[in-house]
Amino acid sequence: MSDAASSEPSQAPEPTGLSRHISVFFEERALWPLVFIFVVHVSLAGALVLLSALRAGSLPARAALAILLMLSVDAIRRARRRRRAAIWIATLWALSALTAVASSYLGLL
Image (tube, rainbow, N blue to C red; front, side, top):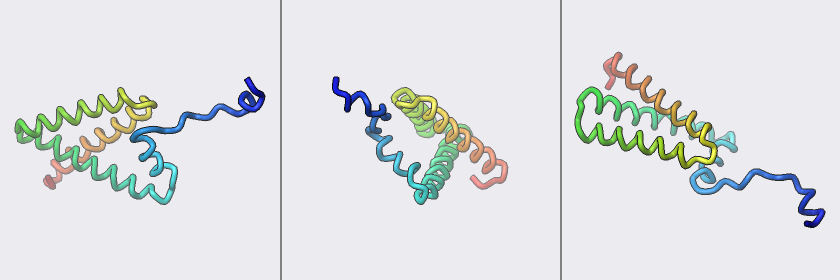
């Protein structure tokens, strides 16, 4: 083992896959508004699916909800940083539920 190889500090592994593309939005502060807009849109879409599945009880809406739940669990299982992924996914589901309750109460959706 050479001295040059042993003197280099250990670095975190290079992000791969989807995290490689997403990490740019969190590292660059100028792109944070896009992250905010993405979170709002995902929350609204989740609220629409939740309201459709629970209020109307249609089979396609329930299937969409089941697929989204399975994709959420799968994303957490495949994530390199599972805790961070679980927190983000739980936050998106909580925002979706909050949006669904608020819009139903206010009569917007």
